[in-house]
Amino acid sequence: MDIVLVHGAGGRPTTWTEVEPLLAARGHRTVAVTNPLTSLEEDVAHTTSVIEEMGGPVLLAGHSYGGAVITNAGRHSAVRGLVYIAAFAPEKGETVNGIVERYEPAEISAFMRRGPNGEWKSEPGDRFWAEIGPDLSPEHRAVVEAEGRKAEDAIFRQPTGEPAWRTLPSWYLVADDDRTLRPQAQRDMAARCGARTEHVPGSHYTTLVHARRVADLVHAAATAVSGTS
Image (cartoon, rainbow, N blue to C red; front, side):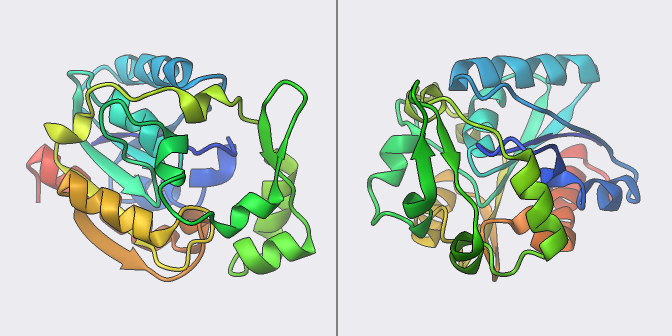
């Protein structure tokens, strides 16, 4: 099945590089989008254009903020299901920022820096990795630092429309030791969506640290929505 993979606010092309070969080996065609991170609306529009280019039924998978994107882009008629990987799954009218503010601030907040125009970017360093991504390899840390992109404030503050998870089947992989998006927030959103939920230990870098578990869940979702065995 065709699968569209959506990154989070860091905007790294390598978010899905460990997962894509595992899905390809199971016969899936994947496209990893690179959204502009200028606003939720523009990221949804860009992802929707990718869905249309695929030319047939698709499954959407989103990591982190990418979950808010697929929640909206999933309203496209070609989308058959949604997979959330330690991701936001907002309700109608909710914002990413509003979800975050309902919980105790996550440890990542100490490392977020705001630019002169209101944009946000994390500031990695030894303390950052010790607290936020202790399970990420040195090689992946170097890539994350090199590829990190700023995200405009509008991606966090624009409200979601009618959520696609209300009408589509959904799956959710909770990162139980996540210090970027509170695990309790993940569990709450998964339950609200009625998602089929699994758990992995570890940090927010789930697609890199637990690539096989991510691929297994995405494959299971693709199999379910395509009607194949």
